[in-house]
Length: 543
Image 1 (tube, rainbow, N blue to C red):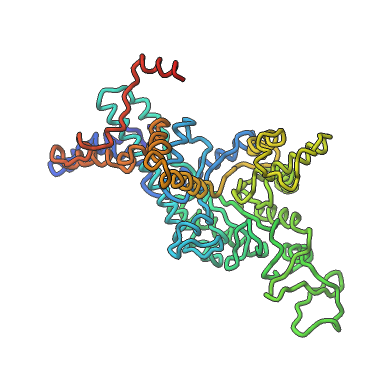
Image 2: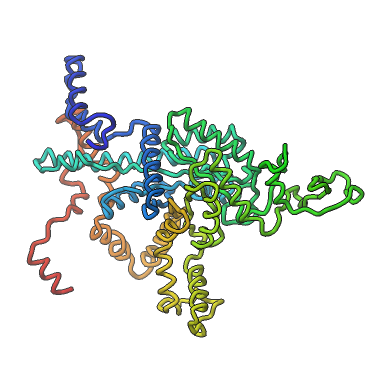
């Protein structure tokens, strides 16, 4: 099998046969073919197996992107193992391969949906253990998807169908996950300990941000406080040590900078010589020149170019950066991270604008030519409004008559069929390919899509179910659509492992096994029969 680790199906079968001969009659109840089938259906024995396998995939994809930026990668954020499982099943169904399609684990969704404290804002208040627990849960569900799909193929093979090729070439549902460690949940030792748990659960790529751990904010909120580069480098080192200790030599570190929108620092680093990292960080502070006589008791003062300056300090003790220094700080953050062990960058931006992203990346690439981004196609952006504003300005500069449009109200539904809307939607559609080509974006993700789709679908279903349509709302808009579109979980018993369990019971107990898939199992109602030719022709005529 292509995805059977290290050995082929035949060699595994031979190994089990030899073991059975070795242990003699005490293994009489073990059928080697069954054991080999179960081994084939569970390729990944541990999370570390997954981390090593998926890290190699990401490294290969990164090299291919460097050679051809049209070969970018994508993911969607998932907050539950079932959501991730259904995503990957759908990807295989619609796109025939999982190639260059990843998973994302969002700290925001862990806080909002997975904390034992209840729903929380994205401020590192949720339990550290919730993150590795979700990684492990996701991979449990993906491994189950493998087992169910292969079990179906083995059943068909035993029934006489020629599906050996599909078994031999089976592509696993297990793909890389980029997992959010926030700001590390404490000091560098805490970051190392949490990183180990995440890697042991299966994470091959860990994303960490340069905010203060105990004051962390969502990247799309105000009040962000960054740390000096030396502090961030220590955490990059902690994660790399965790990867190396666990034998995931190709592990990937994604260094996120929030400096674009962060105007504060909690800590002033110690400069040892002019121009060092600490000195460069301090140079971004907003300061005022004073004399020693102007200094207040307990003031913090710096000497700069032979003069005394006083950093602007807020009542909460935080220091303020100079206005307009944010892009320069982003560039320095990114270059420093890449030169100190990071593999990929993440830049939080205020809007999704390819030209603005490219401006920063091109500056970074002067120092690090192969710098590339993981970019958050965030639901925090109003994509419709942002791109209508961009297109409005483009059309105005092209000399178009813009009097039909109210620039202050471009979200108005009245514009949905307009030329401005058409052009804006075209730019949204090409945003990922444009960003990959022009702005160094290797990986495009949406952090919170399944949070929003869950809310949207519940809104639509409840509006009708508790209204006039009643049960028809569920049947017409959910179950019938699952049947028509071939959604795997329409047979939810099978998806939860019922058929797989029946086969295992037969392996373990033989004819004595009590199975769930008898004639009275209502899931049989969803076994679609082939449409007779006359019905198909009639349907086409009616359509």
